[in-house]
Image (cartoon, rainbow, N blue to C red; front, top):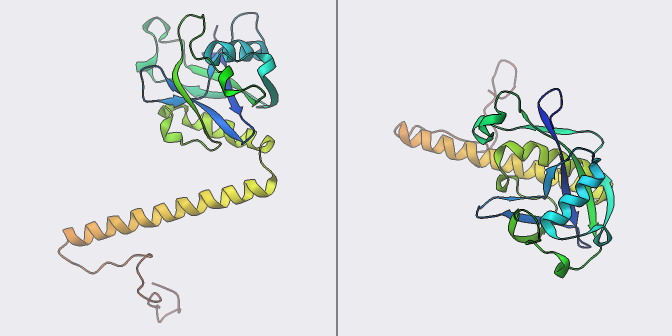
Amino acid sequence: MLDEHGYRPNVGIILINDRRQVFWGKRVREHAWQFPQGGIKAGEDPVQAMYRELEEETGLRPHHVEIIGRTRDWLHYDVPDRWVRREWRGHYKGQKQIWFLLRMLGQDSDVTLRCDFEKPEFDAWRWHEFWVPLDSVIEFKRDVYKLALSELAQFVFTEDELVRAHRQVTANFTQAVHESVGAGLKIATAMLGGVNVTTATDDQGPAPRNPANGQPK
């Protein structure tokens, strides 16, 4: 069942426990981790599809969870041609998803990865911090994961906590950029035969001033 743009309706599930950790599942016989997700069948609405997929992939039933949020609109991702079935190529583009945020009401022992359905999606699972490592997710899904986590975080964290998390992510990114640039310049220096190249991370004192206008060169 595809829409007019070639996207298949789908649901994604972020399940959290009372420590604000998320269910993180390892795909069967792969080293890839992801959230539960699955297609919406004909005649289902997103909520019905979510409960069905939840049970099929985790063994959890409606009384084990509570819905605490969902994305406002569809989130889309394109699937590379090499991942598309041959008979779907040319008219299938990817997935459009409604993401649900669920609170775990049951126990860890209620999770059953091998239910009486077609085939299991996961062969292992664990609780992970809310901001999951996106490099663990297959590349073409990463932007959707980031969008879903960012939108649904408002139901998990206070505004102050979100501001602090954003500052920390920004600081980590800035530090990583500085370290990468510094390492690159040092390699270039060595390749050029020892030409003196300084970086923002080197303690070389203030930058020299342009005598014409007093600004750093």
